[in-house]
Amino acid sequence: MNDSPETKQARAEQARTEQARTEQARALLDSLRGDLGQELLDAAIPEDGTVKIRIEIQQYRRTVEALHAHGLDRLEFITCVDRRTYLELLVQAYSMKMRATVRLTSRLERGAAQAPTISDLWPSANWEEREVYDQFGVHFVGHPDLRRILNPDRWIGHPLLKDYTDDAVVERPDYF
Amino acid sequence: MTGHKAEEVQDFLINIGPQHPATHGVLRLVAKLDGEEVVAVDPRIGYMHRSLEKLAEKRTYHQVVPFTDRTMDYVSSMFNNWVYCGAAEKLMDIEVPERAEYLRVIVAEINRMASHLLSLGSIGIDTGATTYFVWCFAAREKLVKLLEDISGARLTYCYMRIGGVIDDTPEGWADKVRVTLEEVVGEIPRYRRLFHDNFIWKMRSRDIGILTPEEAVKLGAGGPCLRGSGVNWDLRRDMPYSIYERFDFEVPLGSRGDVYDRMECRLEELRQSARIVEQALDDLPEGPILNSRVPRIPAPDAGEAYMRIESPRGELGCYLVSDGSYQPLRMKIRAPSFVHIGMLPHISVGYTLSDMINILGSLDPVLGDSDR
Image (cartoon, rainbow over all chains, first blue to last red; front, side, top):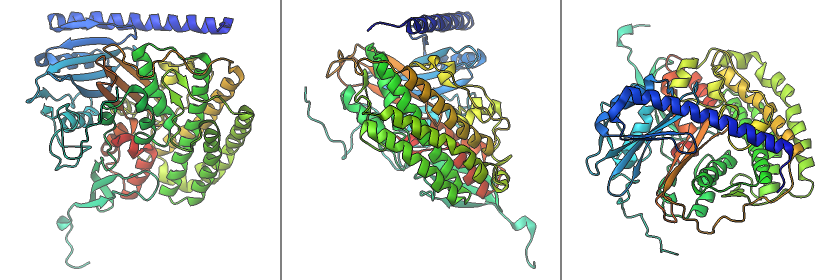
């Protein structure tokens, strides 16, 4: 496919804005490093420009407070990933001014997963945390109203865990 | 009245739903009232929970695409297709052909108009303006017909695939789109005369359900709910994805953040979407519509990808995690309706019960989206 001059120009423009965004992300990460120092176990900016940081769960609340203070005004979602041996708590937020996104991950123990609430920082975290509690059984300490949200109140178990099972779960044959 | 003492009057609970008389879906609201005034409200969602995220973990990447139509926001399925396919393309590092990107923008913007018309019409029902509902549906029907012509389905399109789109435009479709969009945009002055400039509607919507800009940002509002409060933010322009930076369009803003402003933004966005479609049709390049190098059963390397797009309801996101197998390890949908229904307790307190129904309508929730 031959690119027209306009297309080439548009692509160059896109590359420039992407570069600017990566620079923003780098500046944000540097200032976060200054604030949190040793507590960042792992920090990287992959190609898509998202700042990815990993921390111990003990530092979770402090790190989120620092993110909030750094102007990440929009909480996108809180969720969990069941990595089979452990749970990964994941918070993603972005800043409208800097146009930079931060994805924070933290390792939780299976079985007795617990994390402090952040619903006082971002009010929208209230429902997000309820969903994580409902689907993964993570207990958010200090949450004002930790109830199930998508599943019925009397539901047993936490459906999105990999080892969840009930009468309705049908094992699909392995086609491949 | 005899025997009535003011201090004996207590708050009482009223249950609404789980059905909604208009088209918003199965939502239950437990409202605490003081006379006519709402003191607190607890929305109960989950009546349509089908656990899309769990289902996706047991399917191959291609098999998830039709689920996104049905189990997410069924009023704007094109966006669901797009957000999932976009995330999968990022995860697998797949390029989308130029023509497919244009076709995606065209069908998505037509779908946005259809979705906004449904929202405008159903707020008519919420406030007792049934004629307006019928007018909006008549216009929406024309747009749905266009999407049916290109994808074969009225609502659950399943038009996009990982790496492009599945069908090219039928004969004469582009001209039909231009004519239809002109007709629909030409209706807007009529809508204004019937409904938006009507003083009864203004009485029902002005200064009702006020959402300040600071609150809107903090509560995670998106789309017309955010812009109705005057926050100048549109992902299509401010965090451009696909090819949106090539189009010229305006972002309509409200000033007071009330029900009226939110609906006004939607009405104006009809015009802007039509503008984008016009430009995309003008520039539509020739070429392939589907990347032919996408494996039939993809097994991307372990990794993660996130795609966010501006859906008619707000910011729709899809987070995909792969562990190297042919099934996603985790798929998370960031649903705008989920966030917006969560806002209801914050913005409906202090208004009357009938206003609360109006506020709910102005947030334009789709329960398929929030419950997934």
